Length: 107
Image (cartoon, rainbow, N blue to C red; front, side, top):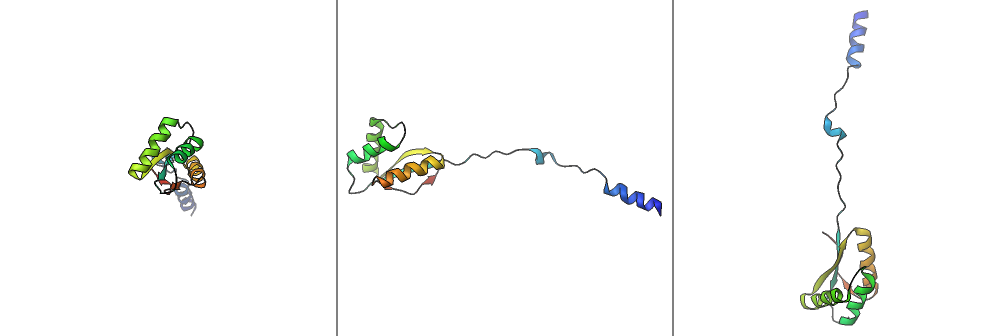
């Protein structure tokens, strides 16, 4: 009877082998988002360009006017791409300024 207890104890305490993949860390990056301004019939070129310069960091006058022309002639322009939180802020600021905005889109 004693031998059977020893055999059971050895089976329970046997070491287990874990695969190497358990220790691997997989890093996933968060997706970027596109802030898109749409063409409309009520915002002026001047207003669109001024809003872009005011709310999009680092937006130059030349770039703002290029994007404004793109909005007018192509119907839309991606005015900023980046992480979700600032994208939501810029989208909201431009919308509140009266620009017609497409929903945020992941890249």
